[in-house]
Picture 1 (cartoon, rainbow, N blue to C red):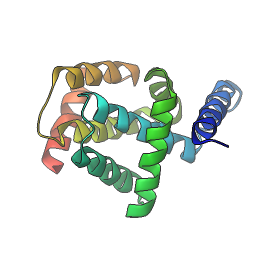
Picture 2 (tube, rainbow, N blue to C red):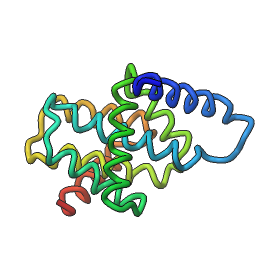
Picture 3 (spheres, one colour):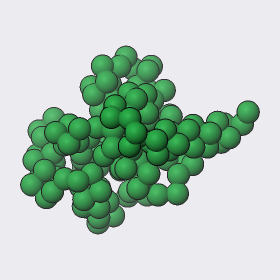
Length: 157
């Protein structure tokens, strides 16, 4: 099976399982949450149209920190996020997965990880700002959550 076919199948399966969620009170399975978060981090890195090595490194650090992964596993998860992002049409699928699968009180840490990626290259750009404002709303958070997440991200860099 070609890689793009595998990614399309993975996304299709992920969305199918999410569609069945109302009958099931459990949260999104951890593996699915991880791919959705990784895809959002990749989207944040691409927002300025320059996917730099420092951003890849920051994505891997954020994933390793969030999920207690070794460097190899974090790189693999980043690659899965890249493939999922490449196969997706928009960010709404991933924000919907995160919103449905990760409790509200934990979504601020996802936003913080996105800010870490955006700030990794030390240049903030209007496309990145626009993306972050849109993601805040799509994750069900507010401007205060974003400011706090950005400050925590800046302090960690």
